[in-house]
Length: 332
Image 1 (cartoon, rainbow, N blue to C red):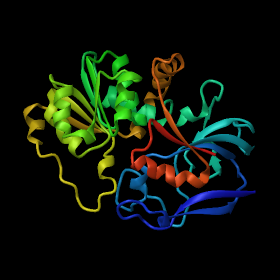
Image 2: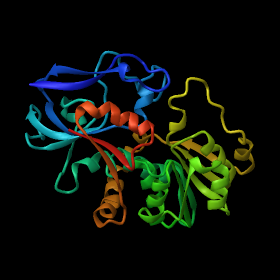
Image 3: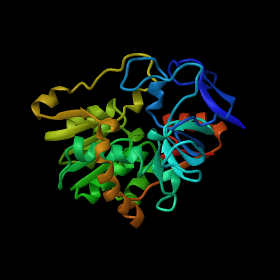
Image 4: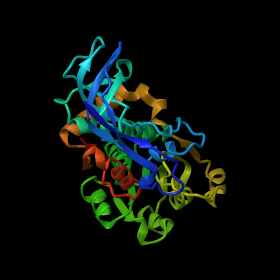
């Protein structure tokens, strides 16, 4: 059988270009001892993947040139050479960007397609959901009555952060997004108290209007102007959770930091990054609490679905351009 997979040919400078990648045909592998062969059904594309295309030192190893890239995926086991996983089972793993994957059973997690749609295990019930949960509740030390501001709030992580804050008793939840349509979605469907289109004016002005009494927690998916505005709006002992800085991922020159860092001292603020890998111990608690919210409709989610492995790259570029509402998924 033929397997199609995406390889990184050269490290992008600035915005990734199609010529930096290639869709390559290979033979489908055979699982060895302790391995399974998975026919991927859904693939994840995420902003952090842009960092892996660079060879700069980071928290995760860069993609290797001339080799298949990686990412979250969920699919059906079509051959098994491992105890505990049978043909027909569905598993979550991290060998995406390809149609078929030979996966070590110890790194695969069985999922139930009858309990929730398979695609949700890549988003609202998967890595992005756990990132939102751990980032807000553990890193952000959210407590009932806090006012919360989320940038990139219509994305997979941001939309979940805002809704969890509301379900946990936030006094006010504010979100920013890149279109009027997304702003409407945040308020009318996700239950945000206020939202604004950051393209319609200075972020600090729109944030001040939306949160006249300031904020207690800022969940950052964007960086840049948003981070500076949030630092200025954070109340005494406020917390900023740094999850992503998508506004800077394709910069070719160093980007200036916030000009109001003195506010961190004056207001005794705490600024801390969140990486989901540090918080996998929360996975059982996360599923136990968030699963019923999703099942009951109390926590809503959106997915932007792109069809076909041949469109995997375009789906990824769409994430960088902000074209997704909720989780961007590639369906094979």
